[in-house]
Amino acid sequence: MMTASRFHAEVEALQLSLPPNMFKFCDMDTDLPYLKMVAITNSKNMYTLRVDLDQFPESIPKVFVTKMLKSKFGNDLDSPSHEMHTLGSEHGYTRICHYGNTSWKPDVALNKVYLKCRVWLEAYEAHLQTGDDICDYLGTQD
Image (cartoon, rainbow, N blue to C red; front, side):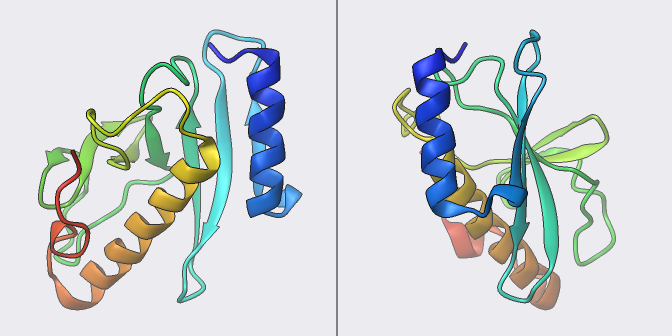
């Protein structure tokens, strides 16, 4: 669980990266806190990300695009896939891979998670154009 001082540090770091209307901490006084962030890709498409914070910062937070994404070929991205850098789905949303187990440290800030997710979204949009797997753009996460 996040301490009050860590929460304030995360808010300050996010304010340096995003306008205040593009992120919101939700249900912070419950067992299932989360962060909603808006990501706009280079092609101007808008996605909403949900970052589950119940185990943050000790564990890698689960990140979801708040809709079920589809591949270029029309398949739901709802299963774990190395090729597509997905980790299944929950809440009807696609869960994306943003940090590998060996690269996660509790001092990683949420603005870095956001940046990794933005890169994932750019790779996803490239996949929609080319049909190439997301791992062709991102490589392997440790």
